[in-house]
Length: 516
Ligand SMILES: Nc1ncnc2c1ncn2[C@@H]1O[C@H](COP(=O)(O)OP(=O)(O)OP(=O)(O)O)[C@@H](O)[C@H]1O
Ligand SMILES: OC[C@@H](O)[C@@H](O)CO
Image (cartoon, rainbow, N blue to C red; front, top):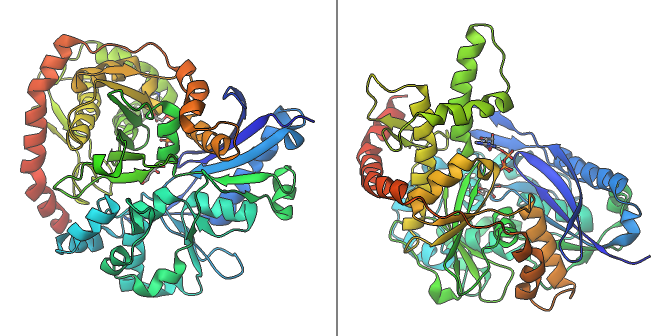
């Protein structure tokens, strides 16, 4: 049997999926299952480890039902997943408690305090990444201060994809992107003792697994995992990089020599620029954002993330949904989404300013403030619901501009993915707010594709990532949509008001947080 398939697993926050590709990058089949997680009190967000593995295995089994002879045709499986968070296991490989997600906000205060310390600048110089409550370093520090019993018995702390890699191969490892932006130095691509010391985690260093670079190394699928997934024992398994790095690859961030940004407008907003050497990484004065090693020598993705992106759209839709419900009309989210274009039709651009900080975890980019909250500014009696919806879309686009502005000049072209990239209105508004052309891809599963691309290079199917991109990315790009000049002028004028008001509101958020 010819081996002619690569499988990418993407264990996301909303969906867990397995995708089969042929060796030239065409998607052959797809299997998915919704993800679920639980909240604890106001700030905790956790997920069951065993269930996550069972769900991932189930999608692989389902994939086998869709592709003839999948097991014997599979060259390799590569795994990526939601980033940040803390997923711990004991010496027998059993889960210790539940996995903390990137949405968990319990470490907010710890982060506030660490960010005030002088040493944070040194930490930032190494990691290139701002501290936020999402991250494993902040979360472990919180546990150390507040509830050390949570890691009693733990021998390894993983991120989501590392846990799945462990279940597939038995190997305890993490990848260069997450290891380095949390605990390391982006120049050396390894752990940094001074970063770990600054976080106060010297005593927990034993929890950090070996860094394994999937771009050059793989391990073999174990017998038990083979039985639960239907794949063949010994199949090469590749540890992908964190989901956003894989999505960046699959969506087309890696095109050196062009002025191309990449934005994911999914649950979270991620805005990225390519850095083609360590010296090309632009560290900002607010000590925020991420610097992520890419699976290409010397290459980095710089990112600024606004915590909540489509979650703001969902919120404004839920306001409408609740109103309908109160008069006895049930509307699903999909049904409500279908009204969006109608609501937007009569609304004017930037007539109300909306700050999209709807998450209970506040904001993480381009500024970090766990108390940040959303607001509408400039309402008058003539504004209607459509204006609120429009301002939410405007707010997402201005937040993207805020993020890109913290990483140098705005890019000329932005490649976008994520749920909201499906909206023609959102694309137009975003292009206007960035003064950039917007390009989408026919590829629906950029994250799983990016993971599979790492495997394609790791297993020598391509000599370099640049060659892989020529087959896996370029042919799938749609025509760029040029920025609307009139809109660009409107947003150019509105952006200073957006920024100035979010700066002015900061003391108000703090007051609200302390009185609640
Ligand atoms: N046509 C649309 N217009 C506006 N918003 C949309 C549209 N389609 C999807 N969205 C937004 O995208 C959200 C999620 O879509 P989807 O589940 O495809 O997201 P995703 O980006 O894959 O998610 P995640 O980032 O959580 O992995 C929806 O809840 C909605 O807010
Ligand atoms: O904090 C990391 C997170 O935003 C992504 O990896 C979502 O999946």
